[in-house]
Image 1: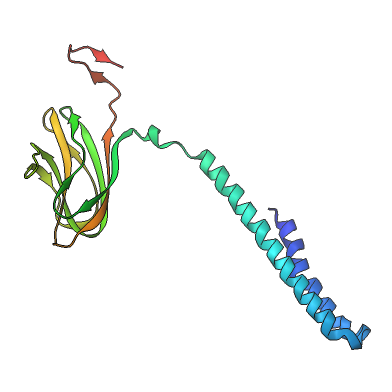
Image 2: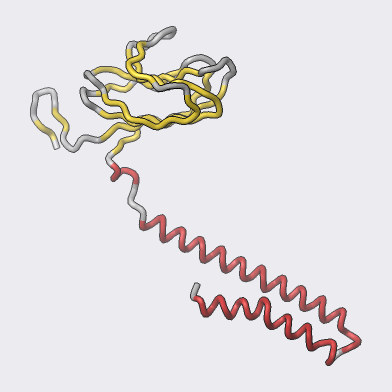
Length: 186
């Protein structure tokens, strides 16, 4: 919306009704109450119209901004899993097969404190913690795998009461991947 258009709209909203209200009692002394009521209704309608125009302008600016942003896939991270987990005891994400020196980024947040583990050798009752965080309510960090294998992210509540945790696991995309035969694949 241009500046000139806004000035005209503000002129209708504020200046014109104010001038008319000031001059009407002189011209029509018996109908002052009705005229003032009509002008107040007109002022409210103008204000509402201005708000509708402003919302449309902001929505179009938001659409332009969304179109100009680059998609998330170009950041070099591939989302492996994004899930909400209900922690009554420790819970894990799905198991991921990762190569040596793969980087994973983990983002976890919840209303209560928990510990995030990079784990292997999962069974129904235990897991082997390779790396872990301190107690936190929200954590984002990267871990690098030391060897090829199966890994999972395990969340362990710090207290006894259950709660929901939102977790996202991303893997750094390699530009070149080495196949098992040793050939480089693009």
